[in-house]
Image (cartoon, rainbow over all chains, first blue to last red; front, side, top):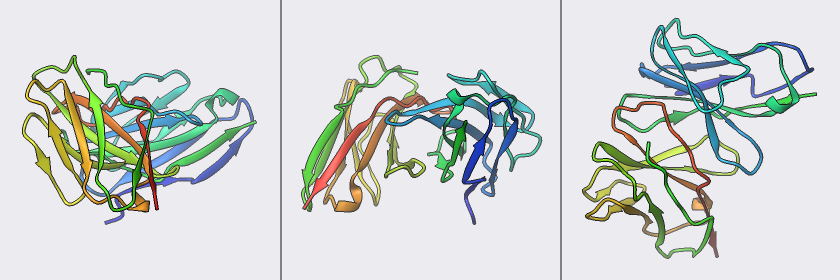
Length: 111
Length: 111
């Protein structure tokens, strides 16, 4: 049981480039979500999903797209990277009422 | 989801109980209190949750006041490895992955 797996662990992008952060879970959880954490701050919710085919926006959705075609995967797409998107990104999964399990994060730098 | 207020930092001596308070005076009847912690820059770790009864698991105890406007997370015998930022989050029970993080309490356990 791997839990929540995020890839890559580190990434450097140039301004304007696009990329996809991968998130996969093997616990058959309905709920998945993406957060970003800027230095010295708490986590902020970007997008979340309550099941395959269903997604919704969180607190800071601008500049990010998501889709949920399977229960296991919830990729986060940066359409045109900006320096303001330099952050650590965490993916999480959970059941409807249980505690959430988080991945180890993707550290993204946009130059 | 209700807002929470936590002290920004606390110290605790190793081996002693750490009592972390959280104020959630606007909590609704269908909202639960969840606690997470984040060690260094790792992904957050779920600790415990509850509605109105006190809860205990292998990691901690959660004490919720009768009016549910505040709660306390208790680490009964704090160790150096408990040094982390602790987050108190209030959300509806079926809120799944939609977690709204505040600033949390930075707990330092000292030898």
